[in-house]
Image (cartoon, rainbow, N blue to C red; front, side, top):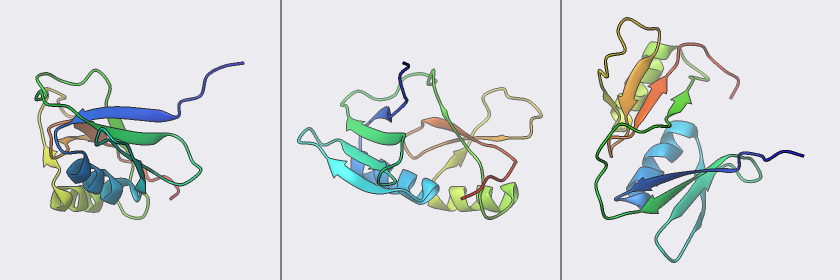
Length: 120
C-alpha cells in the first residue's frame, strides 16, 4: 500500500479571501470550514483539496512547494490575463527565458502558469 495526496495546506492571513481567489482560479468551491477559521476548497469527491489555514505571521520567504496550473479552455496568454484580473501578480524570481509564467496569489504565494492546455 501507499499514501495518497488528499490535501494541500496553505497558511495565510485571510483564508476567506484566498479561498475566493483560488476557487476562481481552479473552478473549485468551498467544501467546509473549521472552528479555527480554516477554509477547505476543491471539487466534491475529488482529491487533492486545498485547506487555507489562518496564521498571524506574514510570509517571509519563497515557498518550498508551489502550485503549477495549466489553462483548460484558452491559451496561456488569455489565461494569464484572467489570472491577473483575479488578483495574481507576475513576478521575476530569476527564472530567465522560460515557457511558463511565475505569479503570486494575493498573499504573495508563488505559483506557475504552464503553457499546455489540459482537459477541464
